[in-house]
Image (cartoon, rainbow, N blue to C red; front, side, top):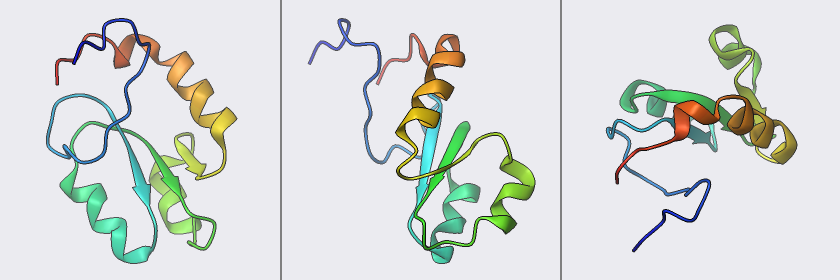
Length: 87
């Protein structure tokens, strides 16, 4: 598929690929994903998770799963980091 007309394409998986990622954490057990994924740009967590332990290292890149405005702002502010990746 040709995605050249899109600003962003969001895909699931591909934890080890070079492109920047937003890691989604459903529960505390998912924290292992922070060690498994490469090139993490941000983290989005479900409201049921305790964010304090995660926030220590990710304070400016940690979002609630429903903070679409905050995540969109991050994508816009760092748009040059999210361009020109071939999947």
